[in-house]
Image (cartoon, rainbow, N blue to C red; front, side, top):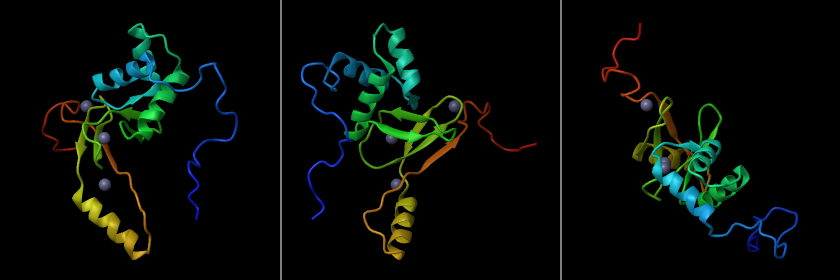
Length: 156
Ligand SMILES: [Zn+2]
Ligand SMILES: [Zn+2]
Ligand SMILES: [Zn+2]
């Protein structure tokens, strides 16, 4: 009874005729997509914006944000909140549910599955009678390369 079409549009003006503020399949959108594909690391909208401009793509930061949001909504791009609070984006190899192992220093990201996490979250949610649950789990650290040697042994 509560499903009344798209309840996602924010209040305010919509469908202003003519003048283009709508998100279209433009070369700007393509450029945002391409820039994301180029990098393997999670990237902030600001960094992506700087990258695009350095490549000669005249695009506003707001436009970058808008295109990113569309890609996130479509499930084509992953969005996470880094542990320093910044929202960052990445185009992942799979659209299936997964988690990330993220290097704090270089941003290198590895997509990981977490069968134990899936089982555990399902169990605790079910125990409390929750349905339609979702979760986000990201692991942050320093990758072996950034840490120097591969041997992470003694901490002083
Ligand atoms: Zn991902
Ligand atoms: Zn690293
Ligand atoms: Zn999961």
